[in-house]
Length: 111
Image 1 (cartoon, rainbow, N blue to C red):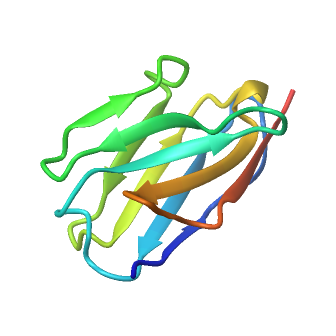
Image 2 (cartoon, helix red, strand yellow):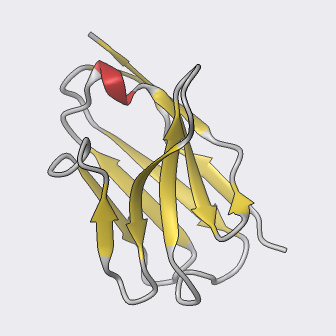
């Protein structure tokens, strides 16, 4: 069993930045890919970014050039640096590893 806990969400003005964290209960990042997803009210959950065990990254077109996914050397915490935030980025952000999900952290971007 793996627990994932997100943190770092909040309210920010458009153009601002936030850094989300996802802490895992055990070292899993070098076992398989991890990802950040988001879900806005009334919308389906969508992929934001992924990082493989080898460190390769992939981003949704809507966040390319603004968001950066990374992890620390302990392979226990994953991050999502979000810059130049837009109101459309307002969502609950979740981290995922295979079938395991965190509880989510709310990001609200005001115009």
